[in-house]
Length: 468
Ligand code: ADP
Ligand code: ASP
Ligand code: MG
Image (cartoon, rainbow, N blue to C red; front, top):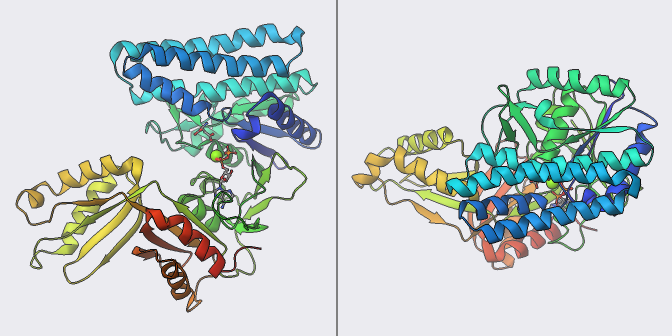
């Protein structure tokens, strides 16, 4: 649909009745000019609350479960009361009860079994988005914009990797078009749940934490939207995380590749997989602040005419460094590396940075902290014989590290830049543990001691003159 715009509202942008009302106004106003599909996150902190409730259930902690369920009810009922006139509240409060009732049934099952199966978690955790889609659509209706809540179970078809599913674009295109086009033709504004989908045979899945951005880009691609707008709580994509660096600037324009690198290396402002579905159709994305909608935001485009050096620095502390070293130089380090990487690939673990050097062919790689256990299991079983016979030294894990990444298309062929970055970090007396740079020179990834991470980010931001 050539003039369709998909608008995604993040957790803080629908975090209260007041925020929902503003989100509804932004969507309603645009829908008077062109067809709009809204994608919503759960209200801020609700997904954490739902996941925590399931952990209480697994541990058989009824008290913890009940307290969380009460918080879940009161947050949504209060939003409903503040959002809707009395005459409209009854059925919506009943629908809220219904959705929370469904969640409660799944959680009770978990408590009974002392187990938290991944596919049940995915079914239950989507409750947050189903509740916010209900509230936002009812708010639109109450203010005179006919809207309807849609569960993305019925639109987004995924593989069966529960908790981190990937979309199957062809069936998604068919289902999403068949369900959403008739709604738009009837003049209804669809409010779709972010974060969730289902397998071809109907089992609920989710797209990973922060996945509503990804939901929105999947739907934008599936429906050939003209633009995707991602409404969040900051003015756009910035030269660094504004919580770490005081003098950040908002980037007017970044490329898909830059945005993807930033997200992948820890910038929470976008889900790392958001840009992938848009590449073929070159659909532009806006990252905008729902708290200051008049500000232009950042435009994310397939390419920019003139790339200018480093654009932004990002970081994450939720990582672990795994090192492997053959016990003797007679052993082929490359073979050890190959077997370890093969095992990691089969375990579906993503390597964030990898570095190897030296005669001994020791190597180290960085993984997300939440994937460490799976990584170690995979490597231990992949190298079981070598480890048992002492051909490979015991696996070394360092969790006291952080990743810093400098990103910019224009860094290519800029001699001296890497040197300046390393010097700036050393000047802060922060120890550099590993360095990785892909041959495309889009990102320089640097692993440092965790307690120096923040200082290093600030130093690099200053050295590359990224700020004001
Ligand atoms: P939403 O709930 O709208 O999806 P998120 O909390 O997931 O929002 O992402 C927005 C947050 O990302 C901002 O509040 C900001 O603190 C953080 N952030 C980290 N790095 C950056 C960056 N480079 N530019 C903008 N925001 C960033
Ligand atoms: N609500 C989900 C989460 O908190 C998805 C999202 O907000 O994007 O991870
Ligand atoms: Mg987010």
